[in-house]
Image 1 (cartoon, rainbow, N blue to C red):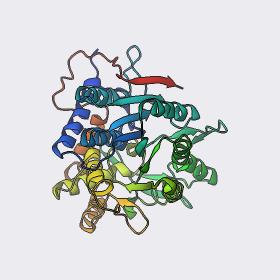
Image 2: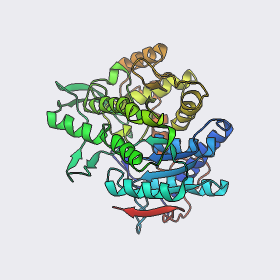
Image 3: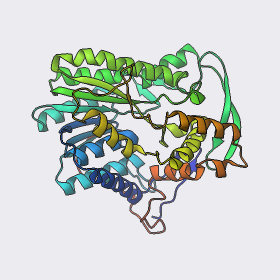
Length: 403
């Protein structure tokens, strides 16, 4: 079949297998160009391994350190005329490349919040790996979570706290800028968002891995967060998501105590704002990213997921220094380029000027759209999108799915 993008709001309902796999290969090439990590991880578990920062982490570990990897994700395979999800094709592309290089790579498809997937992952580690996991990457970005103990379903929300919030937002595909007003969150909204996106599940994973004795001495674990500028604080850092991120960051401090018995460490890396399936859903943020990309590209500071993660591994986690550099709150700051005062001053100036008439000239909306399409395997160089394409693609070492 010929596969074309079908976009509804901030979601693309189709994905292109060859495009997704080529995009993965481009990230692999970038990692190879930056050489091997002399002290990188050797056995890496990535929870949320199929897109965005999680996928980039798996690629960086495998092709930057020759690490064995187990990836956990929840993706859909193709069925009839419905394509698989982009994450499915990404994972297939990664495993194909890993197999060609002779690297161990296995994947588990299922609900990472569940006890069943945790148990299956531990069983695979015990079966295949001697010496334990030396890096655990936690990179889940789900809008809902079924609690493994109670069976209750929790849903996250994107709302300000305390009072309504009005700001500019953009319809990315039409380029229309308008004002949006979001009502304040209830206490239930806040609690549910923290339950979905906070640190409880990360804690559960580490507790389960510790109890099973499958973590190596000196293990590192890392989760990803975002702070951003004051411009987006009401909807992000001071909103419901921000409360969840605060909980995630507090969990890292608790995990440091938990892991001290095996000389382990837990970190949260604050990363740059990027076009991801998660960020595309947040009002205000796509317009901010479009302006940010314009400024950072002009200043030659722009990075995507793989550039961020390579720098995280090379300059922070595995730089060879005795201590990982963190800020006063104990956070790794890979958003340092984004938060440079001159970058933020330029973005703020553009924010005041931007409207539907000038958005294409003073922002990088075209770049935003391009990156959005690439998330789903479209607009990738070297792919013939008019050619017939087989949507059913297998993942080489996929373990049986637990729903």
